[in-house]
Image (cartoon, rainbow, N blue to C red; front, side, top):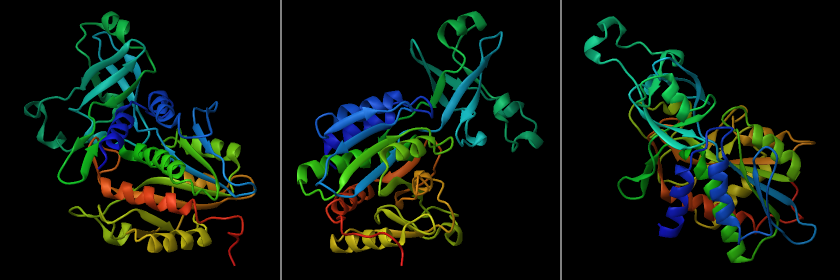
Length: 355
């Protein structure tokens, strides 16, 4: 694990970026790529689009990883200074009470806790019930509404107050690994391609926004870039923990390489090229069958304009959309190596029309 790369990864993951509030993470991306690409811009949606020019007439390849994370938004402040909130993206209401959170305000981060009645005061019949979000509240320690309103505004975003921690070996845990590690991989591929100087495509790397609320940045950035080939870099459901259902998700393990998706959202020619590249480069990989739209930026990329040859490369992730997501750094390195190698294998002679 290269320490410089790890520090970039940590800074990116810990930058607060709930959907619609991605600017802190995008600033980290722009800083990291400023000296490694030919063009770097941010569009009106907030997507960061980096470009490395390829040979004349080469196909246009777009790599996309979304930098937004699930979180919350302040909706109401009551007379006692408690903050009521709603989720941004898919958050399990069951796991939120009792968590530490950070409210990201114009004046800076404000720490808080999601209050929870002590178990001693909960009727036995109610202990297993899920508290709806509209009944949950954040306590920032204020005595009344006036004090709280001086610190917090309606619409301020909120994240869980946890960052990156190393577990054993090459395993890491944090909130927001979905999908800032995808944006990280895209940035690392751009850096590696620049270093190798073996590019055979016109390469666009995009850190997309608002994926968690409807694949919005992926749709608009792909429309603007107009790629011939698009690859979404995402997280995939690991199934190597107790009670995981292999019949539903397949057998996907941490540390055994990136996941290459197969299904109607995936161009079959591009899928075979990814598999062949992995074999030639001796990169372990895993295959996941997805018999429908993938629910990732690959879904909207495929449908842009007259259609795009798309693929989905994912990193196995445990405990998705919780504050304790877990992945293996080895899989990130494998994905960077795979996609960097692919950038020197696709040429203008390639045809991705299925036959």
